Structures are given as C-alpha cells and as structure tokens.
Image (cartoon, rainbow, N blue to C red; front, side):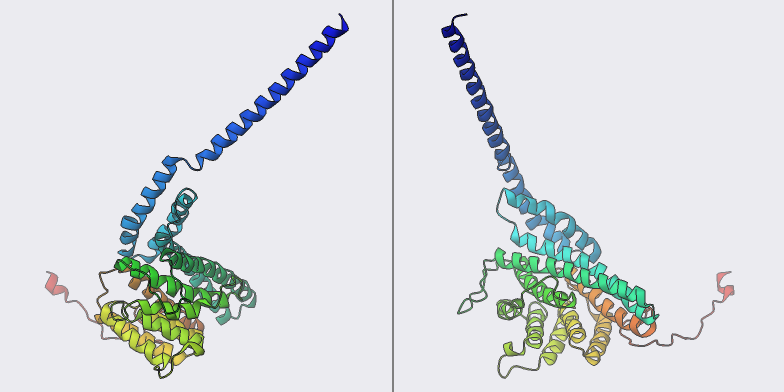
Length: 361
C-alpha cells in the first residue's frame, strides 16, 4: 500500500477516535445533568409544598389535640425526616419542623427518664457497676435531647425571622394560636436544651446565650392567656443568669409559684412542671415537695384545657417523673399510683366493706 494511503488511514482513525471520545464525554455530561435535574423535579417540589402545608394545617393541630404524649412524640420522630427531606427542593418547613423536632426530643427524653430511674435504683441498691453504666447512658441521652432541642429552638427562631438582639425588641408577627405556641415552646425548648447540655457534661455545646434571648423574646407572648408559662420562663432565666433579672422584680421562686397557680386555673400544668424542674436544677427540695403537693391537689379539680391538651399531657409526665425520682432515691421504687403528691408512704388502711350475699339472692 502506498505510504500516502497509510498516512490517510491513520489520520481518519485518529479523527474517529477523537469524535467517539467527545461523544462519550458529551453523553456523560447530559446524563449527569439529567440526574442532577431530578433533585429539582417539579413533581418533588409540588409534593413537598403539599406535604408541608398538610403537616402545618392538619397533622400538627391533630397532634396538639392528643393526650397520649408517647404517641405524639413517635409521630414527631417519624414525620420530621420525611417533611424535612423536601427542604432540598423547597423552602425549609421551619414552623412545622420546630414542633416536630420538639416532639422528637420528647421521645429521647422519655428514654432518658427511664435511664435516670435505673441509675437511682442502682445507687439505692448499692450496685456500683450498674450505677456507672446507667450514669454514662444518662449523660449520652442528655446530649441527644439537647441536640434535638437546640435544633427545635433554631427552627422556631428561623420560622418567624426573629432577632432577639434587636433594639428595641421587635416581636414577630404571630397570626394564630398555633404560631404563638410554636414560638413560645421554641423558647422553652431552648432553655431545656441548656439544662440537658449541662447534665451531659456540655457534650452538645449548646450556647448559653439562648437564655437571655428567651428572657427577652418571651415578652412577646401573653402570660395570662398561656397560663403563666411566659413569666415562668423569665423566672427560670433569672435563676440561671441573675444579671438578667430586672431591678425591683419579684423573687423568681414567687413568680414560679404564682405562674403554677395561674396554670392550674387555665388548665395547663406546664408552669408547674417548670417550677419543679427549676427546684431540681437549683437544689430546692422543699420547693419541689410543695409544688408536687399542689400539683396533685390541683389534679383533683383541674379540668385540662381543650385547647392543645397535649401540653398538659407532656407536663404531667414531667411531674410524675419528678415524683418517681424522689421515690426511687428514697425507697427504691416508683411513686405508687395512689400517692402522687406525697413524699413518703402513706398508710392506705381503711375499713373493709363486706358484701351481703343475701342481697344478691
């Protein structure tokens, strides 16, 4: 074959090779672009908007009307990842997401409660290995709860675009009771995150600046309407950070007691739960005993509010757990079902009533 034809053949082969390479590159680019486009699929975006709106308008109100705190927390824990996965294709659903993460944190807290009782019982029985084991579990669960709660706080603040450092204080627009509740409990959850983080050995790294932010922001919510919860939050912050307490303000413990009383009148025991948690945190057993006795007495006559009854159901679990911790510490077992409000065993002896069998004949 002439040399010129050989050279022509080699040249044509190179051109075909280059052309094929570019086709492969172009095909790869188009495929990649197509796959990337899936994340912005308009169907996903529409589905996300529909799901978020449903969760905000229907699912969340339904959950807030529940009285089964454990079932409510399970819904929050399972629904949150689904709802928030759509934040990849639409705006983050921070309003609903704050409540969902709050409920998810409650699930972790219920597990924490059991671990705390296991630790106290191991201590009571003198089982040092079991006590060390469960003590570490308590610290880890406190970190988990703190992480979830600080996320709920951040979502609530983001949902209402709230800047707690603004001067003067600019309250967010809260269009409904559910908005008020979301904002208020975002602040409560932020404070709880600080306590959980402290109990974990600061494993979660929750910023302490949340406390003064909550003290300022809670003023945007009506205290009378919400059964003393806002003033109870402020009192807790004053105990955590005494410098935040305004001049001539009443004693924080008196504020907590008054808030609890107002809560009983409104059908919410949330303020009472905050009072008892504060008493445990700051080592005031006499306050805890008095508050538990009042909560037990109020339970006999108080009618839980039909507006967001889940609030009272969650508060009741906190109150009962506080009582259980005392009983396990002192006696090695949980609060007897008929002795909530008592700090020691009470004799239940009563005259035995016998049935006259003649009446049945």
